[in-house]
Each structure stands twice: as C-alpha cells, then as structure tokens.
Amino acid sequence: MKSKLRLTYKLSRVIVLFAYGLVLAGLIFPLLGLLSKANIAKKRRDAIKQNWLNSFSAILNLHITQEGTLPEEGSLLVSNHISWLDIVVIGKFLPAYFVAKSDISGWPVIGFLARQAGTIFIRRGDKKHVKEINERMIWLLKQQSNIIAFPEGTTTKGDDVLGFHASLFQPALLTKAPIQPIALEYIGPSKELAPFVGDDDFVSHLLRILTMEKIDLVISFLPVIRSSGRDRLSVSHEARESIVDKIALNVELARVYE
Image (cartoon, rainbow, N blue to C red; front, side, top):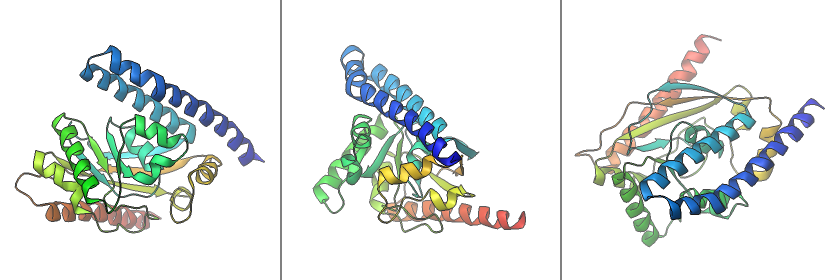
C-alpha cells in the first residue's frame, strides 16, 4: 500500500515535470535562440537543463555520494553505464552534452527532450554518421563545452565494465581536451533495481524506480587523463582501468566494513 501511494505521488510529479520539459524544449529553448546571442542562449539553456535534472533527481529521491573534483570546461567525461538514471545523476552536477544511442531519440517524450537539449545520437555501424558525430564533438569541445559519453556502448548491471569503444576518444585527442573518467555505483537495493538492461523498456522501468523510497549511489570523478600526444587506444584503456580499479576498491572497502 505504501509503495503504491509513493508511486502515485511521484508519478504525478514526473508527469508535471515532463509537461514542463516539453514547454521548455518546444517553446523556451527556440525563443532563447531567437532573442539572445548564441553564447548567452547556451548559458541560459544549460542552467535550465540543470534545474530540470535537479528537479527530476529530487522526485526520484537520489541520495548521491560525490567523490573527486568536477571537471574543467571543455572536457570529455567517460563513464561506465548502468541505467538511463546515469544521465540524471551526472547531468545534475554540470552542464554538458550527452552522447547516446540513436534508439533513445525515438522514446516518447524523453526522445524529444533529449533532441532539444542537444544530445548527440550515434547510429552504430554507420561510418559516415560516426564522422559527423566526431565533427560535432570536436566543435563542442572547441567551444569549451563538456561532453559526457558512455564508451561501453550499452548498459550493464554494474558488476563489470565492458570494453570501451576507442573511437569516442578521438575528438578529445584532436582538440587536446582533458579526459575525465567517472565511476558510477548504485548501492543497497538500488544495485538490483537501477540497472536498465535486456528487454527493459523505459516506462515500466521508471514505474519500478518510482516505487522506491530512495536511490543510493556513489559518483566518483576520477583523476584527469591528459590527451596531448596520446593515441585513442591507450587513453581508452587507461580510462577504463581507472573506473574498474575504483569500483573494485569500493567493493573491497565495503567488505571490510560489513
């Protein structure tokens, strides 16, 4: 009974927030582009996006433990990928453009919001499209924008980190942008319910998440990797190992304090 009441209350707030998001994305963002200079419009859109994600975070009752230092502007941030929740978690900390699978573009409401927010969608296996994506990322990094990517290319349950797609690192190498790994770990009951894998669909997964009293997780901003003079295979390997080592360390510490 308690979980059903929680679901009803949270769902009503999510519906209002998504409706507000549609107004922002469909009306306010275009108006900002027409009425403000490009740099001012970008700053205002970034602030609005962060406020929206903070509101979503509050509804979900995310309890986030932050470790490490936030990145400097114009960085490529790379994270292990567990759930669509990762976007809310990371996005609430800093303005950034996300790199995501093209499938998300077709999600109801969320797809539209993501497109209007400037999300960079990747069509796997399309070499011409990958070239266009790289050019877009290079331009954004040169504009001192942050980009957040999930180089595993898919979500996992969080127990392991899959191999990284090294091509996502190329724009950072060409612009000599800092690369900052991020380690995400959902803990407690969230460890089982947060992963968005397999045949999960967004709506049913969201409803499951909304029944939870809270979602506990740790986000670790790991030491920056300098890209100057490096190749994409070496930096992708270093970034992945940094995340793997951090997750392993936290697991070991948790065992010690059990």
